[in-house]
Amino acid sequence: MVWRCRILNHFHAEPLGQGIDGKNLILYTCPPHTFTVDPFLLAAFCKANPKTTVCDLGAGNGILSFLIYKMYCCMNIYSLEIQKDAFSLLAESVTANHLEQVIIPLLGDLRQLPSELPKRSFDLVVCNPPYFRQNPFHNDQRAAAREELLCTLQDVCAAAAALLRPKGRLCVCLRPERLPELFAAMSHFRMEPKRLRLAADHPSKSPWLALVEARLQAKPSLQVEPVFFAKNPDGSPSPEMTGLFLPGNV
Image 1 (cartoon, rainbow, N blue to C red):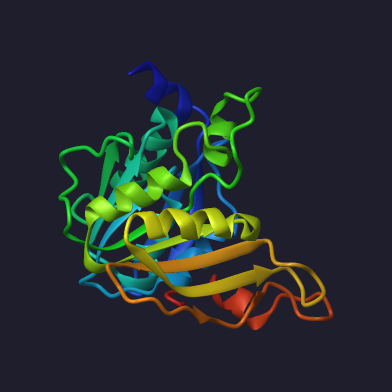
Image 2: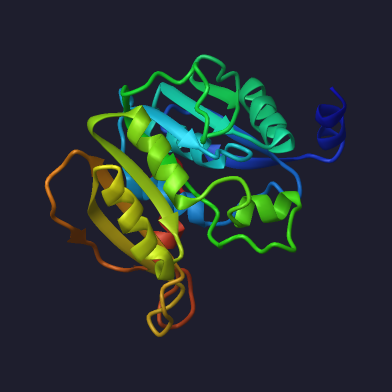
């Protein structure tokens, strides 16, 4: 496949450290399919255990799927990605780490869920969706990862509602200013926001990220958790930030 050869000529193997099972993990990245600290925060926020069945929507190069495996040793993770270059990196990373029986890469569109994804059976759906509304002048791969070219918050919630078992969880991260849209979409698909945590760079800064957990067919009630600060007042990394990168630490 031409697209597979092209992207893999320029990939970089990024070490992810050691998981709780003792394995040293690597993840293939390539501009524009890299990652920030946001999926680390989302993985730590979602909480799981080895028996949790997980679906990662819009998995990109697989960073969130790999972090969930690293942190919780989940043994049943489906990773759905629509962009062929990103999917190539994801699939190659799965093979390189010998995780074919654990992380299942799927090339497909969350707006038309592939038949390989069993409906109403997942304990946890995770998604790091595009943060921004579509700019009509942007149409490249970077824009597709950051803007709503290929899916909207409504699409994410519709897919999650179809995949989750009753009381199953959807965990997402996004910009705080889009929380009203997210809550409206969740409500439309009978999901109730149950946990909210904001993340800020520094105690004097406004939050850059909101982490939300919703449950399908649950009763209303929202727990607001303490703000995550990436840095201490003196500018040094906070203990929580440092802890995100320790082996198996959540």
